[in-house]
Structures are given as structure tokens and as C-alpha cells.
Image (cartoon, rainbow, N blue to C red):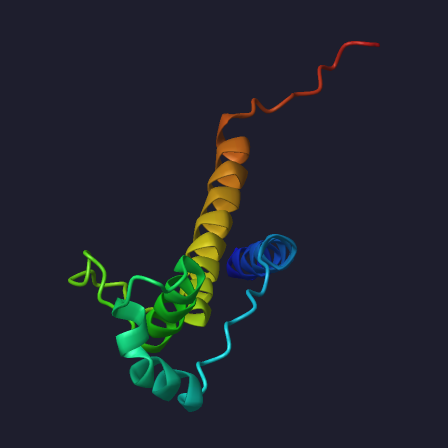
Length: 125
């Protein structure tokens, strides 16, 4: 019985790994801003306030500052905000494997208990 549960768990983990590998995509992380970009932004801060600056310069400066200084989101009290991708995938794999093995064990038990036993009759065929 225990050997079958372990085999079911291994099968469930294999299915999860296959599906997660097919579905998940590695995100290309943005390169951290170069220090010279930040210095040039602070040096040109007076230019940003003038009326003659194009909106493109403002957008570029805002993008660099946003990448350099992460702002806390509204749900900063969330318990899972510090969970990285690897930890989340491992937790999902463990939960999926346990649920998968428990379901297969339950279905196997139900088929043993609820399927009527066929008796051979002594009569001729």
C-alpha cells in the first residue's frame, strides 16, 4: 500500500514538473540601471522642470528612477510578498503531489470497496 502511494506521488511530481516546464517562462530581468544614468538624471533635474523638455526625456527619466528605487506596493503587509519564484514552485509541487497521490489512493480504495464482486455461477454457459 505504501509503495503504491510513493509511486503515485512520484507520478504526480513528474506530471507537475512536465506541466510547469511547459507553462512557465523565464522572464528576462531588466538590467539594473547604470550609476552614470542616475548621476546624469540628478544633474539634469533642472532640465526636467523647464517647460521646453520633451515628454520623452521625462518618461525615460521616470523609467530609470522607477527601476532604481522600488516603491512598496499597497499590499506590503502580505505574508507572501517575500516569496521568490523557486520557493513558490516548490510549495506548489509539494501540494500538487500530495493531492494527486491522495486522490489516486482514494479512487483505488473506492473501486475496491464499491465494485460488486462477480461470482461464478455453477450453471453452464
